[in-house]
Length: 433
Image 1 (spheres, rainbow, N blue to C red):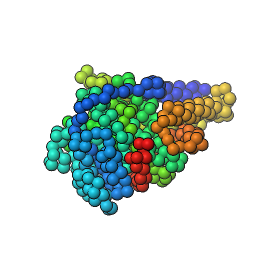
Image 2: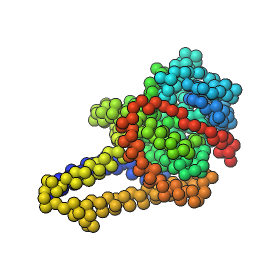
Image 3: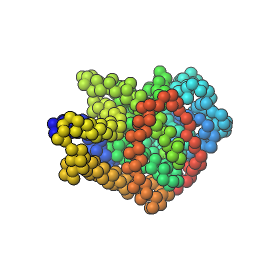
Image 4: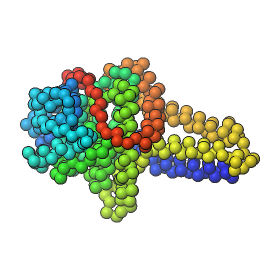
């Protein structure tokens, strides 16, 4: 049985090592459940540029602009910029009619949101000077803001002396539309409660998630350079690596439209996974080496973000699959080995061990979803109890399909960025009832 013991020892050791490297994620989740960081209200109101990339968003862009205009923040301190990139509809005109400063940009070869940011910041620098603003908010065109969103973000920005990136609570406009939008809503709610909140309470950097964040103007004084499929991942890693921490403001709430189609969901998550892998392969070594350099600031934050880059779901399931494949060859290495004994022994068989770990993972993941619904019950509205139960029961599946998505992402090429249809017209008044 030496072959079997060797296979189990090596693969289980690798799985344990992966678990140890990521164990602090659980600590942050517990902290986030138990506590949150609040910021004192400030009278000083800084000047901000509000950045809205919009690709064929004529149905929703005016709703975001309206919610900015109706925020309890001095409007003379705000300037709204819309970059209508690769549009084939009336997005630019709708945004102008709503009062935004609009730039149009068309280049099919540069179709990620990062390219839109790069072009827009170059125009802002030329026409206004980026340093004439204290910071810039980055949104998606389908977002709608809570009435106090800008004030609460301003409070947090000033609390950290205008040196940190501030991200915010990402709620869903259509949480209760169907099961899929509910699972997406759960994904972002878990990210806020069990990832960002605990990290900020503990003084560790968190990460931005695509939209709803505020950056110091100094970060774009030389332009925007992040143009991959997931510019938010690249932006997060580079800033923590260079010493700029990303903080979270739980009291600043914005609402985002989630996909309701399985096809759109799969396409979007493959793009996310592909972008994540690109950042992992191009930046992991740099970040990992920097952890051990004497001059590195915020060492643990850098360690945390570096570990976040590891495609952990893919690696853990791939290691588990490798273990089973290698065990199938046990009889060839040792004639005394029995596949029935290796796989089906109730006490020591690997299939029974897999069943036990699967049940534990399923139950614990369902419990995490239930906790989110309980803790965030005042924020997650218009979702019926039966729908909440269904979301909680299927939440583990939503996470588990990350493995085939990662596999597809490994072999996908030239994905590009394709627009996600946005048609939910939930208004400022509806989210501020």
